[in-house]
Length: 197
Image (tube, rainbow, N blue to C red; front, top):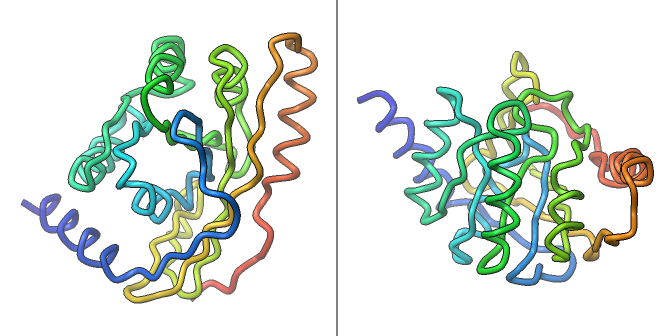
């Protein structure tokens, strides 16, 4: 019962968000990454695409999955730490038909540190990936969570900044992929240290 009430409250709050996009809208057949702590508004913004979203198999992941299903998203349950190969294979298969959303620093961090899944999926599928950073004018921050999870407040303004598309060449080896992970982690690091409110 409490979970249903929580999901209903999140849904009501999300409907009041004023979200704007900065950058080019992603291609339909692409991967869209964003940091774990910023996931709610990105998921909500792209809900009309009916995308697939990667969600962990944890108890919290089940709650998030229920929220996403209410928003019309389809979920792939698993993560780099559990069911990683199956998740990767499913991502590569699903991107052929729709957008795939994922948090490359999930499910347990370190926060804002890119893991290789999104790059490997792009390389093997030869589909582009994008990365989103969000700026939220007013938000709650769950300071005890590993990702400093953000819940935008009702009616707040949210800007989603999307990077240009990137495509990982099939010719790159593991060492070169690791170099790109470091490069992209720096490039996509949160741009602003926002005031906690």
